Length: 258
Image (cartoon, rainbow, N blue to C red; front, side):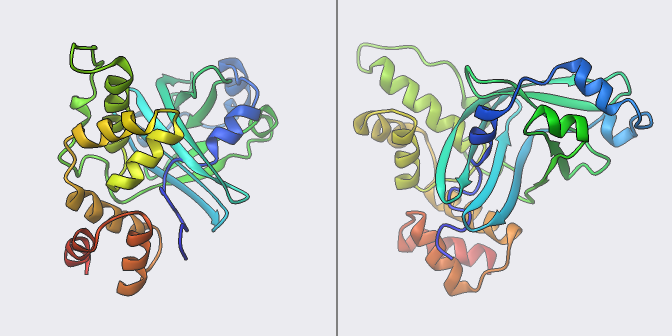
């Protein structure tokens, strides 16, 4: 069961975004024109939060969106991990249904649409999926990304100073952005920053200065795992240990969820 949801939420969307065509507003309108006017939920849909799509141990995806229009995608496709930062903007179709445009940075823009259930969103991988109206269903995690001492308001554009480099400042900003959306252990965050291309020293700087309480992160991670699937106490301990938490942090987390 190790790495069943690994970093849990940063998944297959990078792969699908890279291969998907750019969906236009008119094409969404055409695909959506037979649906009745949007419900109250669809008109007032809230995309902010953590969303998960789980197929099996080797294929899972998810994304986290914060109120600043920033987000994270991580996951595994056929056992291969990937991840990255995204930006998102919110729009509305003529029938009142909300959708958001996901930009993975230089790649094609893809879309996520609201649904009649505020705990579900509809993600389209390709233009054919839009034409056939065959979305992937992502379900919102029960754990909101605000349950941490690192808040989204702390994500600001850093400026280089005499004592830090631009690389260190950017690594710190990326660390805070990740933690505003999903939980990480110290070592897990360092690994994620290195995966994003930061040097080891830059990643260490980001993790050291992001202000995270790693005990709180462990508790959030435990809650997040349990919101996706059941774990025994020993199984959850092993999973959190795999994620890089210390024994003291794991025992703290288990005291909060068991």
